Length: 115
Image (cartoon, rainbow, N blue to C red; front, side, top):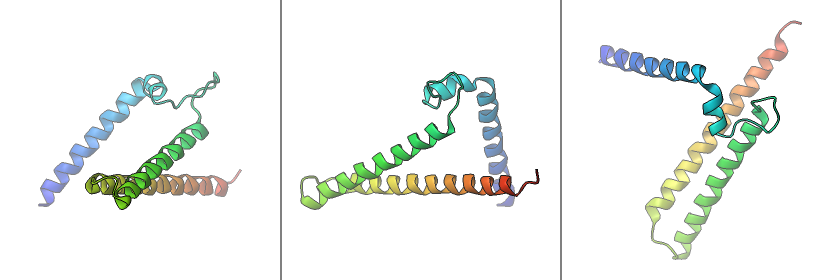
């Protein structure tokens, strides 16, 4: 059991390393396709990326709410789809909060650094 788990961890690590190498080779192509560049020639905008992520999570939550309301009102019988949309919105929000927590932790660490 332990060797199987170690093998899975090594496989995941290798996949992450390959992804990191792929991103290091062509970051502009991947990020511009996702809309992470702003219109200025400065390049990557963390603020815009976070705004886009927040808007995406909000849209997922609204869509899930609409699907649940349609099921509650009897306009739709897709209960499974509504529940899946609700769970997806919940997971997206949880992921966004974890990213926020990591960013805030990094900012706190930067503030603690001696100048």
